[in-house]
Length: 63
Image (tube, rainbow, N blue to C red; front, side, top):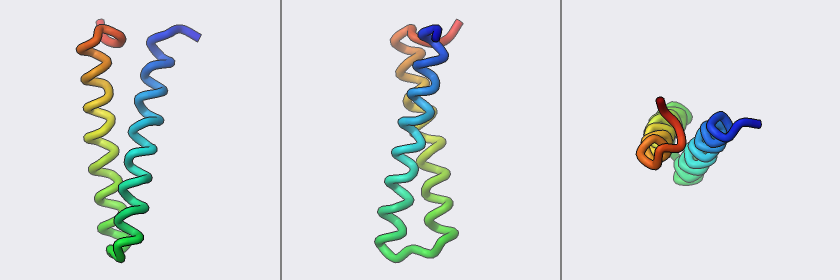
């Protein structure tokens, strides 16, 4: 497998793990299901943006 798609897949999986962890913490804290879903979605977007931004800054992905 080429290196660049592999790193993007790893970044997406890492963002999913972070979002799942945030959702589980919110669920155990007693939040409503809509709040859990919103916090997981917001965390996924932020984590994915951060991971891809770091990979682009390192020159791993991008043009």
